Image (cartoon, rainbow, N blue to C red; front, top):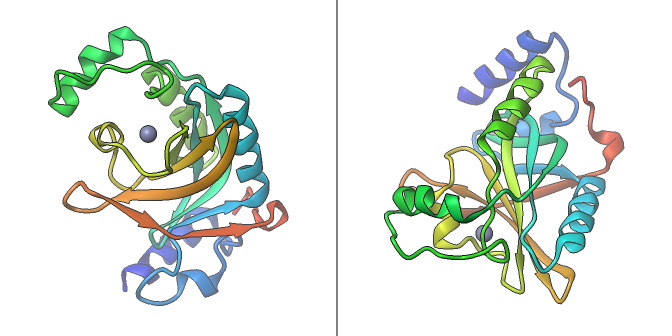
Length: 197
Ligand SMILES: [Zn+2]
């Protein structure tokens, strides 16, 4: 039922059939996938995070939510704005006084950037649906720090970069207990992504 309502609302909002998330993926009680991204975007993200190795690199995933599937329509690379001042803020958020860390192991997206991107996205009927960042020389599993700063409903795409090359990527989403659960990824070609959805 929820699925049908979501589809209906989406159609009403856009007055057209959603193309990027085909019906075969959104009909049914349980979504088959939770994150949909084109291979081309994934490639761009890989190139970005490899360029910034050994520092962590990050960006925003813009798109639409269709029946709990975060469909990526655009990617927005951001600067890793992590600095010492962030330590105090994030230590408070995570409840840990000993967070520490440099840009090799921490990432932050400036709140001004988030707001600006959110506004621009809204103007085009898009929204921020996720965040991606790299783990230099570490697996693509979320850290306790990642969990502490995560938002519900966002997809967290993590790329493991070993010796300068992306070796693995996985996507995660918070459950109701604020724990990360891995989500499935559906890969499409860019041509299949309809920006006007
Ligand atoms: Zn991380």
